[in-house]
Amino acid sequence: MQIEHMPINFEDARGYIRDIIVAKEVDSVSLITCAPGSVRGNHFHKQTVQYTYILSGRMTYATQKPGQSVETKEVVEGDLTANPPLESHAFKAIEPSVILQLSKGPRQGDNYENDTFRLETPLLS
Image (tube, rainbow, N blue to C red; front, side, top):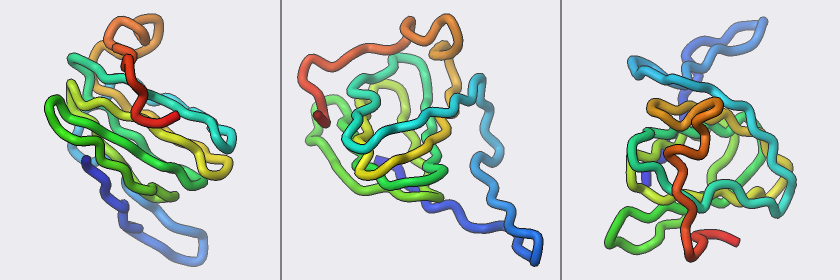
């Protein structure tokens, strides 16, 4: 499980700048809204690396690497998660939440389902 709270890089009277992804390539960026109690994910990717940035809200985040136990933590605004290939992952909104999903690999656009493998037993429900 990789979670990093992204620091504010610069701040003045106008507001702040926070870098989300630095020195990493991404193929797609998706904006996703989540109603309280809704679950996103419960899948893994064979080739895609997926980053999730919490723009607002609070969510339960669960991951599981092959052959390991499920890990669960809470993520909040400013947190960035990273899921390498084969790591199962899921999010459950505790409150209204907005996330950015940044992906490197074939999971994008019309190919969204080509590298998305649903779990038989969900991490979160």
